[in-house]
Image (cartoon, rainbow, N blue to C red; front, side, top):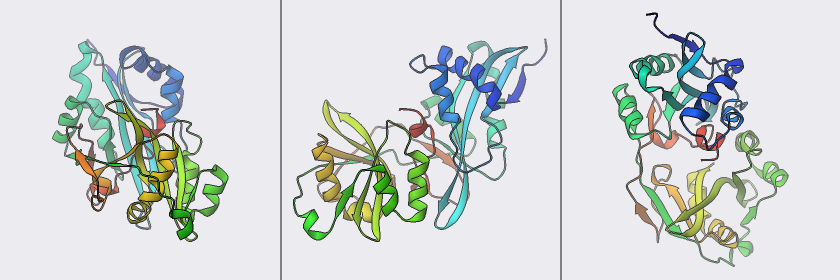
Length: 285
């Protein structure tokens, strides 16, 4: 019996691969919605969209890859974000061929930000490191003094782009069309922080899950103004992954028990690994 073939996922293969994901991984998203996550233009000439396994002409497994280039401390860094690893039961013996095909590509930092427990353990066998899974939560309060201190919260897309520094404005442009993301520029002229968040809920209480920010110190310094703005959106708390913060703010608490995200890099730390440019924002997760 011939061994199933391993092939890169070209753009022309996405309809078949994404239909496979719709049928075998999650029917909550159409094949077209799956495909959108791989069709972002995030500053890199992508080599593929991951790899798939075919048995003759039938897709029987695959692993997705989302590529991006980001500036980190003034240097361009290339990322490969692994996602949507799915193989039919009778072909599970082929699973490691998929993972090895992705991680053997040179010149990338690798991430998986939504792994199952099995995937996380498998990738750790391939020298991926687990990241701190704890999340910081703090209440949002009215903060009427912010405007008098010159702190503004800007939410209009054109206005956000106009006040951000060049690198931050590019990050905003790369994500502004994704309708499930909310953006704000918080701060003063020359010192604005780009904040990306989504509606969240903890134990039935509505809040905001902050996915990313352009400057951690500015984000913490402006947290009262940001919190007052979020409270106006009926978000009663702010939640952030602890690994993204240099320290926990006053009146915050840490929640534990979340699944570890994983990454593989020889030069970057977990605080450098952004939720942006990944399946977390490319799909409405």
